[in-house]
Image (cartoon, rainbow, N blue to C red; front, side):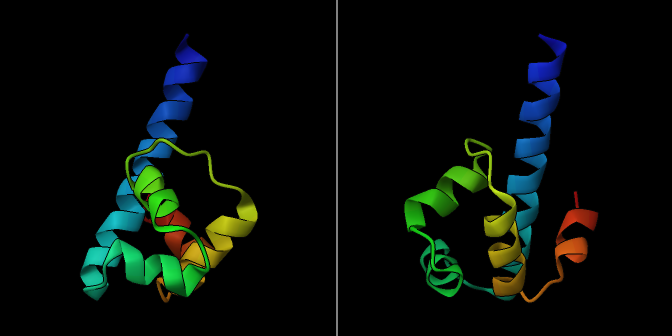
Length: 76
């Protein structure tokens, strides 16, 4: 059970980092989805910590948020 909680915590922290940066840039979930070539509901799921995002999509998000991959991960 502890492992599942750690995974959930990580997903929630990642989602919060994406949302914080998106809001910092003043863009909507729809704008971010378009920039990253992902669906808006997928962005919503990420921000709620409900998605385990692939590394490819993490890179797309970082670039779309004007961050490096390392920069996005540092904000966790």
